[in-house]
Image (cartoon, rainbow, N blue to C red):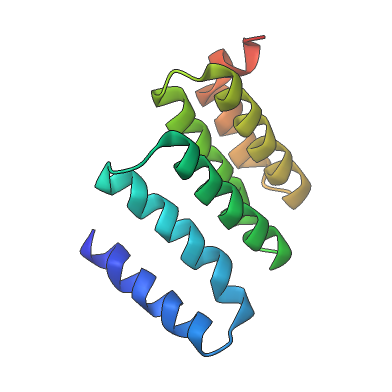
Length: 119
């Protein structure tokens, strides 16, 4: 938790100095911090993750965008929203496929096979 807060502070400083590539990681860490604090509405948390994902995509940080979708899916699953969990896992898989991270895709397909079979 302390390490995450240090990284969040670091990325905030980079954004303040005009580093456009730090915005997405900063927003991702903010969303993760919301999860850890357990003080959030799920709609608010979903919006925070989606905002982070858009920033990460704009910065071509595909690996982090895939991770953010995966983390969002897990949160939706914990909230018993399996439809959204499946949707976000599929987005994550698509990003990893496009990026060429085939080992990660295989691991995720095994790990989340039940989610992907749901309709």
